Amino acid sequence: MPGGVGVQHVAFQVDSDEALRDAYWSLVDHGVTIARAVDHVSQKSIYFRDPDGNLLEVYYELPNARDLFRQGRHDRDAPLVFER
Image 1 (cartoon, helix red, strand yellow):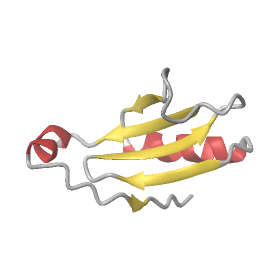
Image 2 (spheres, rainbow, N blue to C red):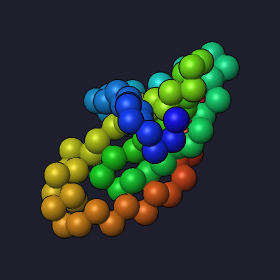
Image 3 (spheres, rainbow, N blue to C red):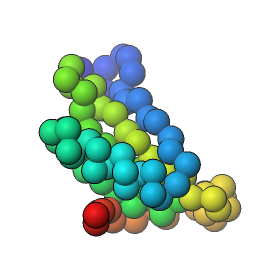
Image 4 (cartoon, helix red, strand yellow):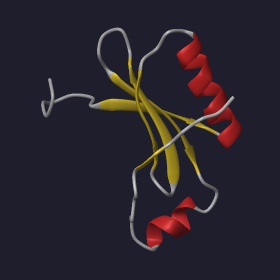
């Protein structure tokens, strides 16, 4: 229930750009619909829903994410494109 009480989404962190790309293609190859893939500046995220409709996220946080965050969250939320 949007805006309701409870978990709004669950996120899983990976340790590299390559791991994020691999996760993206693994999801696609297994028929998972990607809701969106976004470059947030300090992190890159893939969003999708599980069979129950819960929003899940796999993300890679850049090594300098804390510095970027301290400078202000100027997230650009640009679409993220993965190539094989």
